[in-house]
Length: 158
Length: 88
Image (cartoon, rainbow over the protein chains, first blue to last red):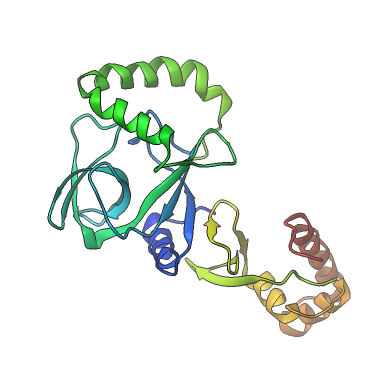
C-alpha cells in the first residue's frame, strides 16, 4: 500500500496506542548506513519513556514525520538527527512522538534486530563515537558500497 | 468456502484494509487492501459459507453488472483471497 505519511502515520500512532507494535517500510536515506531506504522495515512500539539515542518516529516542526535518533533532551523538548545526516537536526516535543523503534528488520530478514539487543547497541555505540568519521563513512557507503554491492540485491520501490 | 476468522476491516485513506485482529504486531507491508466492492463482499459473507455464485448474486443485486461479468470478477477476487490466505 502506498499511503501518504500524513495519513498513514496517524493510523500507525492509533494502533500503537491500542497496544500493538507496527511494522512499516523505511523511506528515506537519513538513517544510513544501518537502515536503508525501501529495503529495511522498522518495528515501532509505544514510547513510555524517551532517552537520548532512542530512535523515534515523530512529527517535527512543519508537520513532517521523521524516524530519527534523539540526540538531545531538554525536559519535553527533543532534538533529533538522522544517523545519515551530517548537520541537519530537527526539534519536537515528547507529545509529538508517534512511536519508538523497538527493532529493525534489515536486508529482507525475518527477525528484527531489537534496539535493546546487543547488535543495535554496539552499532549505536560505534556510530556515535565515530562522529568525526561520519562524512567519510557515509560517502564510502553511498558512492561505493551501496552503489556497487548492496544496490543490486534490493529493489528500490519508491 | 469461508473467509478466515480473526480479521478486521479498517478504513485508511479511503481504502479498506484488512488487518488481523488481536495480533501483537501489525505489519503494514502485509496488510491486504480492499476496494469498495471487495469490502462489501467481505462483509456480506463474513462468518458464512459461500460459493462464487453467492458472491456473484450479491454483486448483481447491489451493482449494475450482469451475471457473467459478476462471475468473472468474483472468480478473480476469490483467487486473490485464496492467494492471500484469507479463505478456508
